Length: 164
Image (cartoon, rainbow, N blue to C red; front, side, top):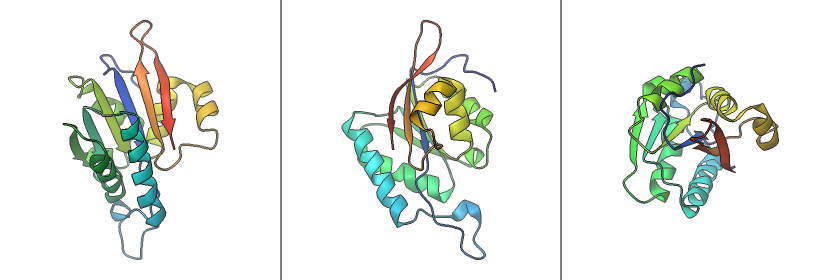
């Protein structure tokens, strides 16, 4: 996976909230959050807002469950955060997420709202397996929100916060 050549100062990685299973004849893309997922998304968004997390831009998969998760964030955070819903994040590898961050280098902070395994793979690539094993030993939870800060000296990423 390519590492970020010109990163923002902060990256937020959020997995969509808990969704229901596809109904007969329903595409995976159209799966909606279930009741628990709707509550989960609102709770994590509320905690993020209380902690002052306000990304410059939110790049979300256009899949319904990601849009619903991102909309919970939109309702909770005030300010001029830009929201973009992108088809290319649906079923994308972690490299596609990296490419989108690279294309958003004019922003100080970028939030990605997407899917596993890409979110977890990107998280592991940026902070390393020790941080992954300490933070999410059972895998990246639905509605999990990692806050990563870039350290200019050495170019490393550190996990500042994880909300689940």
